[in-house]
Image (cartoon, rainbow, N blue to C red):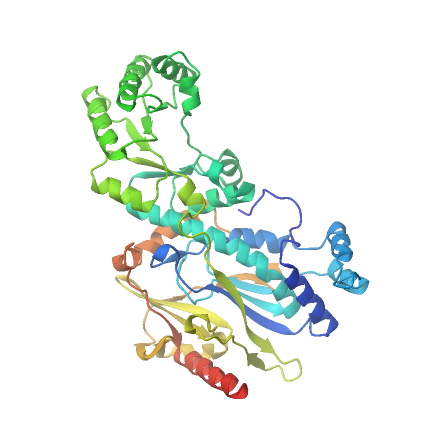
Amino acid sequence: MTNKLYDTSLSLLTDLYQVTMAYAYWKSETAEKEAVFNLYFRKNPFSGGFTIACGLANVIGYIDNFGFSKKDLRYLGSLTGNDEKPLFEPAFLAYLAKLKLTCSVDAMPEGTVAFPNEPLVRVRGPILQCQLLETPLLNLINFESLIATKAARLRLVAQSDTVLEFGLRRAQGVDGGMTASRAAYIGGCDGTSNVLAGKLYDIPVRGTHAHSWVMAFADEQQAFDAYAQALPNNVTLLVDTYDTLQGVRHAIETGRKLEQQGHTLAGIRLDSGDLAYLSIEARKLLDEAGFQDTAIVASNDLDETIIGSLKQQGAAITVWGVGTKLVTAFDQPALGGVYKLAALKDTETGQWSYKMKLSEQAIKISTPGIQQVRRFRDERGFMSDMVYNTEEEARMDGDVTMIDPLDFTKRRRFEATQSYEDLLVPIFDAGKCVYELPDIHSVRARVQAQLAGLHPGVKRFVNPHTYPVGLEKQLHELKTALILAIREGNQ
């Protein structure tokens, strides 16, 4: 399901230099030159061992609705250069008015486990169009992948406990809140407090009440009883407004009244204090009163580290409400994805010219080629990922050799009989969507299936094992030759 929050074209959701480059391509009569760009990231977030690819549904919605409106074009026509004269000539604006995307897009399905330096999205088409897609694709993929990864980490540490996303009030604006709710559910959260996200994305909505509810009554017992009377089939009581353990006792009294009416006390919520100690003591009180099935919910600036610590301390918490540190990706605010030109077709010969960016830092050297990712697996799960050039696909039916891009002495050979899956699947073919979007619940299930395929060492939080990702031998040799040619040419 695509993002229904906006019902207008978002074609100006881009950086100005994308439009100025598009203008320069048009002006130099190279706008239709066929190009290939790869979108990837260089490091896993949160010092972790994996990333969850997310955001594809909104990419599809963006591309499907791409187009410059009359208002967009009037605005672009009002922009001026350093000489105060128009930045773009009318003929270019007329070109944009008729522009329809004809790019082909291949991508990893949402919910796929991904790793550094392998493409999440590959875009092929006229270079002007590919260029205009850079900023919006990075915006849509980077943030959702970041939040989905954070949620997946929460799911790993919480194990079978319920995890709820409670972050709307602390999110980065309206779209930050909506996008975070969607990505968090995909990554592994069981529900959200965000009612609009529940409506638009079919996410279960959950919630309790605020301290203000308790403070609005003469005493806590009266507040609990009134809430239970209003919503007898949805009673989770926030017990820490005044005195937490006394609040638990008041909740038990309300629970007894509920039982007389044929209802149950679903849970109590702790939002402050020593959550480990208070949850253990609350559990004792609930159990002694016969409320063994009443859940203990905890909130209060939780993240995967704190949840892990609380579980180690024996906290009697089975529902975790995570807000600020989830929806803001508190300990790493950006994924750092990039979008690099990798191939350009000669209009006269029809031959591909492979492109790459050099850097003094090895991690920032891009990889050329029309890339695909092949994931090898055995009966135990995923073995490694190999990036290869699709122009060499005919050779991929036989045995292949994978080379570590940061250490060419590390090589691994895979026989033709080895099980594998190519991860990039067709999304758009010459501008037409050919991909059937799965529902959000299927995407969420895919995340858990993908994580199950990883070795436990890759999923640990401290010094995780590095999942092997390498280049197919021919692609490695192509990259090496290009590096040498470029450096020799610049001497």
